[in-house]
Length: 149
Image 1 (cartoon, rainbow, N blue to C red):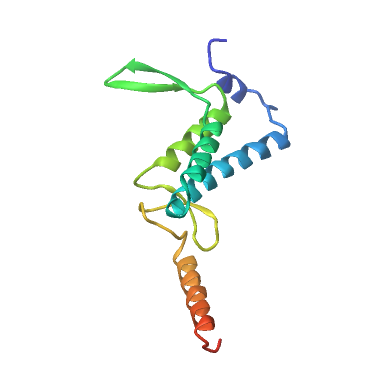
Image 2: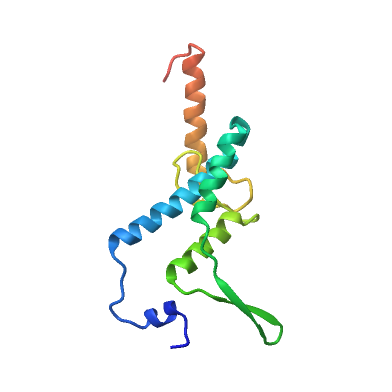
């Protein structure tokens, strides 16, 4: 009974959350990701009021705080006390979103989420980058009066 709730539930064979609840969690995470993406992508085009609105929206979804303790092993080690699977996933998602080396990104072409292999990655694959550039150049040709092939 001294163990966190998530650990106790992991041993229950038929434990499950209702589908509607799980779907809502994914929608909340998608909101968090797209809010962060648009905030930094459109930062120069937004006024201070709109930036403040984005900051408030992000803060509203980030209010769950996990606890931790330090154990003195071979070296001091942090042990996170996550009381639910949701909190664990949300914490991992948050770490991925703020990671400077391999950030969680939104593909500029297909709008799928991917883990960037560098901090300025904009596309999930070379194919998406190529398709994006092809569509961009075709758009220029149409506006310049050129014929589309």
